[in-house]
Length: 167
Image (cartoon, rainbow, N blue to C red; front, top):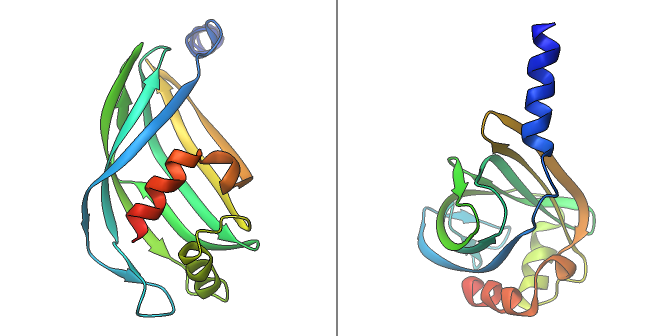
C-alpha cells in the first residue's frame, strides 16, 4: 500500500498542471578546450565546451541531468554531445545558465560529409536525437526525441550563432 501511495504522490508532482514550455533564447561559447578532429585534420572541434545559454522557463524549477544530443548526417550518427553535470533551470524566469559539455566524434563514412555540409551552412540532411532526465522535486522522468531535422529545431538566429561558433 505504501508503494502505491508513494507512486501516486510522485505522479502528482510530475503531472501537476499543464507543463509550461521551456525555450532556448540563445547561447554563447564561454570556453572551449581540448581537441577532437574529424577525418580531415583541417576541421577540429573542442572536446569540451562551456556554453552560456539563455533560457525562458515559465514553469516550475527543474533539474536536467544525463542529457545527450546525437547529431546524424544522412542517417549515420557522427557527433555526440553530453552534459557533464546537472543543470538547474530557475522557476518562472528568464535566465542565463552555464552548461559544461563534452563532445565526441564518430569516425565513420559521414564525418567528412558532415564537415563539408556545415562548412556550406547546410543543415538539410542533419538530424538530431536527444534525451534528458528532467526532475522536479523528488520526481523525474526521461524525455527523448529522435530523427528531428536540425533546420526545424534551430531558429535562424540560433543557426547564425552555430555558424559563428564553427568559424
